Each structure stands twice: as structure tokens, then as C-alpha cells.
Image (cartoon, rainbow, N blue to C red; front, side, top):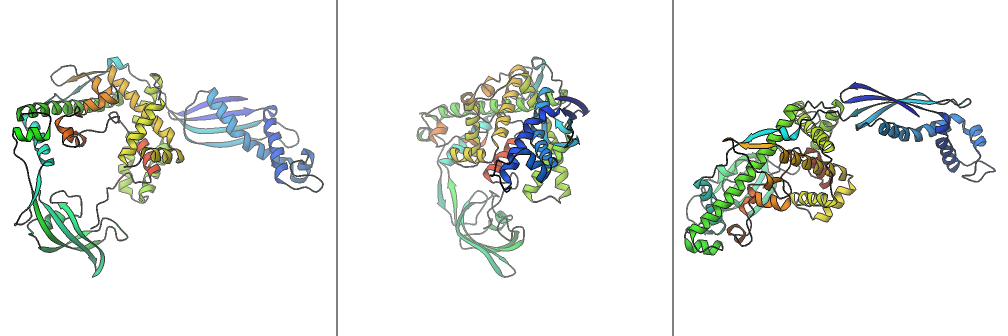
Amino acid sequence: MKSDVETLNPTRVKLTVEVGYDELKPSLDAAYKSIAGQVQVPGFRRGKVPARVIDQRFGRAAVLEEAVNDALPKFYQRAVEERELRPLGQPTVDVSQAPDPKTGGDLRFSVEVDVRPTLELPVLDELEVSVDDLAISEEDVEQRLDALRERFGTLTGVDRPAADGDFVSLDLRAEIDGEEIETAKGISYQVGQGNMIIGLDEAVTGLSAEGTTTFTAPLAGGDRKGQDAQITVTVQSVKERVLPDADDDFAQLASEFDTLDELRADLRTQVEQSKKFEQGLQARDRVLEKLLELVEVPVPESLVEAEIHTHLERENRLEDAEHRAEIDESTRAALRSQLLLDALAEREEVGVEQQELLEYLVGQAQQYGMEPNQFVQMVDQAGQVPSMVSEVRRRKALAVAMEKATVKDASGNVVDLEELVGGAEDDEDAAGVPAEGGAEERADGAEDAADAPEAGQTVDPVGEDAQAAADAAAGQEQDGEERPQG
């Protein structure tokens, strides 16, 4: 077999392959065997029809066609490996010459395919980026203390109109042109959350118990999603949260500490850890931005179009030109990051251990609220494991870049990122997860969960490829958070 490669542009090549008749013979023999097993010829058992009879009955051209179809993928893959190409997407194949049924001859075909571009990567030790200074204020500490007090607060009924932050019990009724669409009773809701029906906060504010009002809002779900409906809301009760006093007694109730001063000192430490984690995330983004600034990363147009089509098709918005333009921009940015990190992972010889992949999949399962084994099975059945492996590899590649780069704060001090890239346990520390028995754990769940990603998710430069794979496996949309319909 002979092969030649022509570079059409930085991300696309034309591969020309010539295969001698002798090398095609195993595929010819396989074609005869396959056809013999499919046809019924009088006087011969199925599968035992001689080649000459097949030629007479069906023509040698049919045999050659099947042999060529069988051989093409094998010779294409062999040529790709010999030429050390890294294909992206589906190839386009053109057979320019096939063996003659009578005289034989060579098989010649050409393949155009997108390939991963060759990138000129910088020396990581020479990278330098800047992040914001680590700033901790008393207001940060007080906010964390107030959040802790809220978790120990009590709800008390009040005889006054509902105000922002109050907890109300609601009855809801939705109608369109007098037709009842849906009703719900006894819904608990905190005024000001803004995560239910558009306009609900404004409608409820100022209503006392047994108060009723009507407003118009689009439905957020169901068969009539997006249609304007008349929403009738009735407030059954109004309660306010009464917080315990911030004193030594509260410190003893909510933590392992005896005094409020000790509790505040512990919360200050947690704020510092959380701020360091945020600083690390900023460093991650700045390192990736720096790499993209230094490296020209061409993106295959066919790959961009395929990604956009898949995204819009999943959202049923193929005809939305405005949204297509938005997705085009984000897709190109994501692919540039992916291609750069793939090249970096290859240069730095980054591998993925099975345990690392399992930890990543467990984290993804938690995001979807699924049992890990079930999620892993769904990902495997959907054929999305390679995408997950690629994402873990990219994360590790960026972590390598972060370790080797010099990161300084705005004041010129070198920032130690070991807590961020040092592993899952260090990630938890950097995220501000409290030590056993600390104030936040005693309050049944760290407040840091709202401030920082889960452990194992600290390096997330792109995520879209793996996110789409996870969404596909879990059967969920990437975009468009759905609000309760009421």
C-alpha cells in the first residue's frame, strides 16, 4: 500500500491511497465467502457456492464492490497511522480507481478529513499571569455568620402584608381564555427568590393572609409553555424568619466553639479559604486565556457547523438565526480551548487513570442528581465515555500548566496554587469545606457549597464537550432552566 498526504489548510488534509491487487485479495476472499452465505444456488449448499459460480451468476463486479467497501476503512486507518494524522469528524471518501473484474489492477482512493492542527505551544515555565489580591473584609465574615444564623432561625407567623424575604404559603391557579390549565395548593415560597412564575414576587408583596390577586405571566412548562395565562394567587399564611442572637450561646449551639469570638475567627478562616479558592479559579482562567493569546488555534469549519447543528437541534431551534450566531461564537471559543488543551496534554504526556475517570463521573452524577452507577451505565450505553476521558485529560493538562506557570497577585506576590491543583482532598480544602466538627458542618452543610464548585471540578476550562455528552446520556437539555408552572 502506498499513501500520500496533501495539506489543504491547517485543519484539513487530503490523503491519497493506492492498494495493490494482492493486498486486496483477503477482502476479495471475504467477499466471496459473505456472498456465498447469503445466496441460494441450486445444487450447492448455502455457504458452499464456488467463486466461479458467483462470478457467473452475480458478476465479479459485485464481488469487487463488496471487497472494496470492506477494505476501505482498514486501508484508510492504516494510512492515517502511517502518516501520523489525528482525524477530527467524518472523512469524505472518493474512489478514483477500482480493480477491473477481468484484468485486476490497483485500488486508488482519496480521503479528505479534518485533522487536529499542529500547534506551537509556549514553554509553560515562562508563563506569568496576574490575579486579584486576596481581600477579606469583616462584611464577608458577618455575611457568613448571618447565613449560619439563618439555618438556625425559626419561622413565626405574622399579621401583616408579605414583604421581601418572608415565607408564604400559596394557592395558585392558571387560566387561558377562561380554561383552567393547572392549579396547585399549599406551595411554600420565599418572597424575592424569583425562581417560580415571572411576576409572582411583585404580586405577592403587600398581600396579607387570605389576600388574593391576579396577574398575567407566561407559562413555564407543560403543553401551553410560553403562552400568557391569568394567574390567580391566594396567600394562605405569612411567616418571617426570626434569627437567634449572635452571642456565646449561639456559638455553642451552632459549632464546637464556646464563644462568639472563636466562632468568628473560624468563619474568617473559612472566608479566607474560599477567597483563595476563588483566586485559584481566576488563575485557572487567566492561564488558559494567556495560552490562547499566545497560540494561534485554527478550528475546522465542518466541526464548528456540526457542533452548532447538534446544539440547535437538541433545543429545537434550527431556524433561530440570532441564537445560531451566539452559539457560533461560543462553539468556536470552546473548540479552540479543547484543541489547545489536547495538544498540551499530548506534549506533557498527560494520561487518565481509571480512578480519575470514576471520580469525574461521580461528580457529574451528583450534578444531575443521579445514582453514580446508573449514570455511568447511561454514559457507557450512549458511547460517551471517550468524551469524558478527553475532558478529564484536558483538565489535567491545564492543571499542569497552572503548576508550572508563575501566578502573582496584583501586589506582585507569588500565589501558591498547590491547594487548587494538588488533588481532590486539597480541592476540598481550597473550596472552604470545614474540618470535622466545625461550625459549618454542625449546621448540616457547608455554606461554601454555594460559593465554590464540588471537589474534583476545580479545573473546568471548557466543559462543553463533556457537558453535552453528559446531557445526552442523562437526557437533559444544556440550556433553559425551567421554572415551576404553578
